[in-house]
Length: 142
Image 1: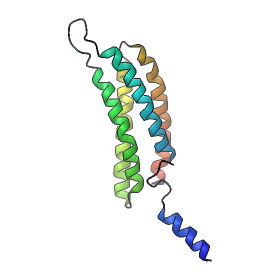
Image 2 (image 1 turned 120 degrees about the horizontal axis):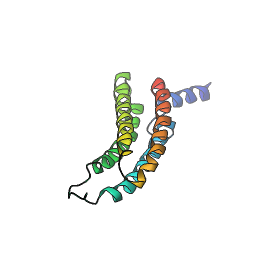
Image 3 (image 1 turned 45 degrees about the horizontal axis):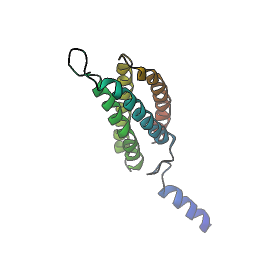
């Protein structure tokens, strides 16, 4: 009986997701982060040069945006998983949803640029779709 109580106590004190990287949605967020870093780096090389009219490519800012948004996904997931109260969990989960939506929109914007790197953006969008599916299940478990 003592071992059973100890096991129950351990399960209750360590939430399913906790502050670790065991959740599928967190792992997918980390994969997306790595992918966006590589894509942004590749696109930046094409966009860093000035246009023929002497102006910079305004699309270069979207490459920074996808990095910033993907960097923010992981910490927001961990915050949602570590909160005790449902309202706080859902606040951070909503932030994850907003970030993933912005990331998806910026991918679509970057697909319109004239760069060889844009060929990798559909791959990122597919990964974001997978992330959204995981995110939906994850939100139901919070």
